[in-house]
Length: 132
Image 1 (cartoon, helix red, strand yellow):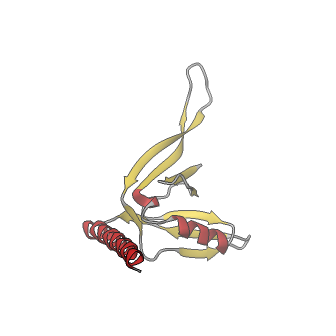
Image 2 (cartoon, rainbow, N blue to C red):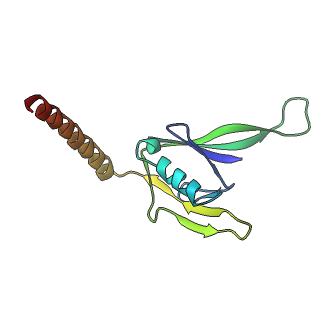
């Protein structure tokens, strides 16, 4: 089984052979898609770990054993546009494709600016409460 784990430890099972730019997942319904979308936040995409079942043959054994192993770690990611490509499967459920890419220096700077604006808004609200 292959999966990605976000910073908040949310796990997403992905199809075997997926790349960072082309991740395919099977979901039960559109409610599950909404839940997935809600997890793909800038905060949760600060660290993304890829895991795969990697085979090895223990000493003295003939059959491989599969061990879940971190194969890649990415930081400061964002969801590519378009956000999702969705196909309804004949047997029910959805096949959803999305991709991740690194946030650019401009994206990172915009995130810092948004945080500064939020901090300023909070400070102003506190001042208004004190004056009011």
